[in-house]
Amino acid sequence: MKRILLACICTGLWFSPASIKAQQATPVAAKIELKHGSHRIGKRTDEVMQKWRGYGLGQFIHWGLYAIPGGEWNGKQYNGAAEWIRSWNGIPKSTYDSLIYKFNPVNFNADEWATTAKQMGAKYVTITTKHHDGFCLWPSKYTSYTVANSPWKKDIMKPLVDAYDKAGIDVILYFSVMDWNHPGWRYDIKTKEDSVAFEGFKQFTRNQLIELLTMYPTAKGLWFDGTWDKSWVKQAEFADQLETEMRKLRPGLIIGSRFRADEKGKRHFDANNVLMGDYEQGWERKLPNKIEDVHGNDWDCVMTVPENQWGYNKAWKGHIKTANELIEMTAKSVSLGGNFVLNFGPQGDGAIRKEEKQLATQIGNWMKINKEAIYNCQYAGLEKQDWGYFTKKTGGNKLYMVVFNAPVSGAYRVKLPAKMGITKAYALATPTQSLSTEEIHTNEYFIHLKKQGGDQPFVIVLETKNSSDNSGNVYDKAKT
Image (cartoon, rainbow, N blue to C red; front, side):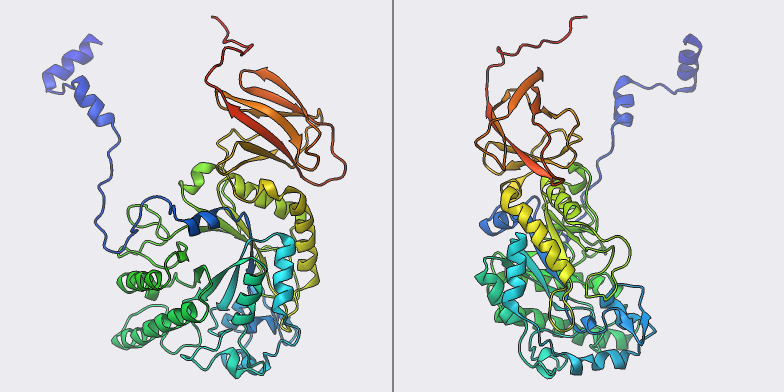
């Protein structure tokens, strides 16, 4: 040690404790000055967003011309998602575009769609106004490629918005910025001609969005898609100004993180790693595993029943999720402070497929009994246990144990924060029957419940209270 010290002195390599500490400290990245990054740090606290935060369960509707071929053309199956079939070389683009003349959904019934969503327990719905193919389900005056020029002729969006509003389900309008039908759309801007064409497309996009917000004033938000191509990513200033215009037109409008990029080309999160938009939209067909994964932001998960089918596909391939799987995804989402949104792809004739109706009924039957653990609930801040998920009533003292893996012993472990106690425990399905609670360590308990009948997940409610006095604890730390 002395030799090392002497060598350091002789060579001038002397490190003071302060210099060593400074070198060990993790440097803080300098904040990048951005004009078109996030304009807010932290969550929105207004009433509209607080309501969104408490939805718990939602419905997604993917419907358009792609529902007519249903993932199939001339007897051949398209292996991608059905709504992308126009991009397949197995169908000529002009042939696909001519499907507008076959769009006549004689079995479309907006009230039935809303009834199915309400039966499932959905509190909000996101509906495609137009997908990447550019076909509009409303009679837009800025293009001829709309429902008005189909055999159906009538507006689809108005009866849908009215029906869901009547059912007490808030409406979010899906809008694809990418538009394969518009002559001005470009995947990238490489020439002067591209730039001129895309300028016209930008104005077209702005006009359609203002039109939607004007025609359907009760819609609560916009859900954007098709915003990843370089052409749109380069439009930071335009998209930022358009977002400002839309929010001014509709105070309280909810827009997720997919709409725009900042001037550095960053999407979802700006170059300072701050969320852009009102909630994170990175959870598509996947779920976070821990609270740290969501970065303290609002978020929702959008999920398909098969692995990757949004629009109607005649053949559901691969694993088909069960009602219990989807209920667990709902509980997990809420337990991590998010919402869960289940997709439906109605058929070309407008009818919802029987498998989706069956799932809606099964989920809805569970929700009728257990909805208290899903609606207006949040992350509980508790250590997850193997039996399932915790949720917490927002602003209340109730904790919910959503059980998917019942322990053989019938003893459900719960670990609470210091100075929190359980005043009552009961199964949500039988609230008048109190459960036995056993303290096994300081702030650790077993909730005893005999095995429930059937294979359905269930909920245990814990009513809690905070106490400033821990003198009643019967356990002490071991003395060593």
